[in-house]
Amino acid sequence: MSLTSTTTLDSQLTATWGPANTYPDGRLWPQESQPQFWSKYQVWEWLQQVMDMHQIDASSIPFQNFDIDGHQLCSLSYQDFIRAAGSVGQILFHSISELKWSGQCHVEIGQLEIKPEIDFSCPFPEVSYPPEIYDPLIHSLAPAVSPTPSSPDIKRSYSRPHQVKKHNPRGTHLWEFIRDILLNPERNPGLIKWEDRTEGVFRFLKSEAVAQLWGKKKNNSSMTYEKLSRAMRYYYKRGILERVDGRRLVYKFGKNARGWRESEK
DNA sequence: AGGTGTTTTCCTGTTT
DNA sequence: AAAACAGGAAAACACC
Image (cartoon, rainbow, N blue to C red; front, side):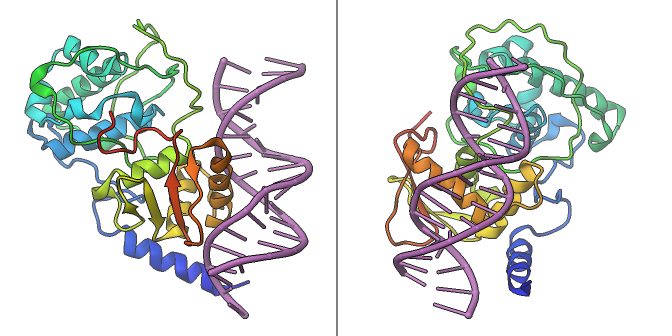
């Protein structure tokens, strides 16, 4: 029974997830109730929320297509959403429509109900994007589950242009979760750090805090770095990670890990 | 209902 | 001595 571990974790977490206006996991939710006035960043926040909410993997849609502010976002048509995000576009469109509405009605975003009961096996948009919203910048998604706001019920009636079957059981895999933290400097207050960006080498700075966050995502409060790291070691054999000798808390993406490169996707 | 793939849990031993 | 690393084994889980 050691106090040391909890103490360490506490300090990791406090150092990590700061101030008010955040969910327990540190996530900020856009304050503005009217999406028209959202900044690019807030748009991006919303995107993450919706993806999390529906347990859709972050890599399922090209986040670059949404490097736009709220005004632009609100002016996109349904077709634009479909073009920009494939079948997920439908969900996004519904969500934003709802928010536009509730914004006008002055309803707090956080009070809206949602029932994510949607069958989603992983849509990959195979479309060309409206030129005006193509601007690679933001890649991926932040960690953690969320106490969810907004968005409507959507019935299952999707036309999937191209149903790529992936495995991806609900949400992300561990390595994707790690990747997404890495790709998200704003939401990664010193949890994990690139050691060599182009080689895909990274290091855990706050191992227990990351484990805690992972546990949170998986709804498992007893997750520890010990256990997380066991899962990481299984990745060696699968080429998702490569061993990095001698250096503690350091890992490297392998050839079977996708979506971590700057140039990629 | 059974099979598969991934992660979790636990453990023993080694290394830093 | 404490924290990481290594993997084996088996259970748990989510999907299909």
